[in-house]
Image (cartoon, rainbow, N blue to C red; front, top):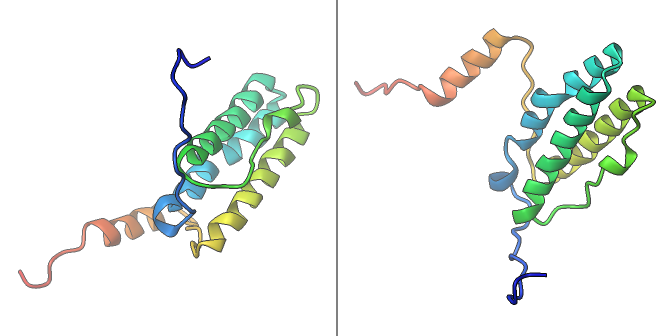
Length: 130
C-alpha cells in the first residue's frame, strides 16, 4: 500500500563508465577477503553480513541504473560457509563482466604504496606552470 499515491518507477540510466566507476573495486575491497576469512573461522554471522552487504550494494545500484538481476541471498547457506564464498565470487565475477562491458578495467594494486602513488598522481598533480 502506498497511502493512496501511485509510485511511479524512476527512469533508470543505462550502465556507463560514469555511473559504475569504482563500484567493483569497492565491493572487492570491502568484502571479498572478509568472506573467505569468515568461512575459515566458521563465522556464520560475518558470512551472512558480508553477503548481505554485497546484496544491498547491488540493490542501491539497481535503484538508479538498469542492471541485470543480482539476487544472491537466496543462496546463503549457514551450514556451508565455503559455498557462500563461491556465491560471493560468482556474483562479483558476474558484476565484473557488466563492469567491463561499459569499458571499465578494474584497478588492482599490489601494495598500499602503489595505491598511494596512483592516488597522489591522480588527485594531487602539481601545476607545472607555477
